[in-house]
Image 1 (cartoon, rainbow, N blue to C red):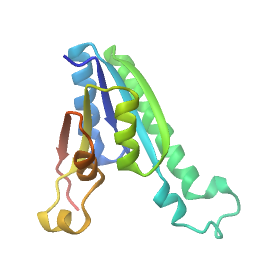
Image 2 (image 1 turned 90 degrees about the horizontal axis):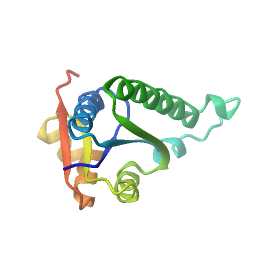
Image 3 (image 1 turned 120 degrees about the horizontal axis):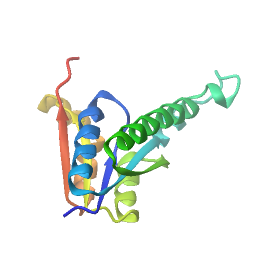
Image 4 (image 1 turned 90 degrees about the vertical axis):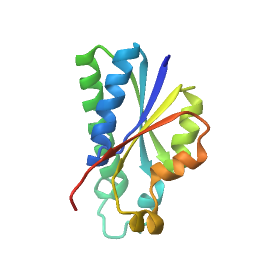
Length: 149
C-alpha cells in the first residue's frame, strides 16, 4: 500500500513518537522511508551573527549539527529494523520545504509529529504540522505526543 513514506522530523520530543510510527509503518509495508530534517531559515536569519566569533558557533551550525545527529540516529534505528532509509537535510521554511519534498520523493504518505497543546495556544501560534496539513494534497498521519510544560 505504501511504497514510499516521508517522515519529517525536527528531532524534538514532538517527533519521537512519529519517528517510531514511521519506522514501524515502513517495516510493516516493506517501504522506503524518506526522512527530512529542515534547517529553519527563519531561525537562522533571526540572528545578526555579530555575537559569534565564527559561523561554527552560530545557530545555523547548531541546527545542522542537531539535524545530522537526528538523521544518524534514524539511520541506525532503520538499519536495526531492516528498513531502507533515505535521509535529507534541507534549508528553508519548514512547512513549504516539507510539502515540496513530499512531491519530490513522490511519497505515498507523510508522517508528522506534534505536541498536544491547548486550543488557545494553537489558535494564537499554530504549528508547522498545521501549516503542512493545510498545504499538502498527500495523505498524512499526525502522531500527537503528550508533553508536560
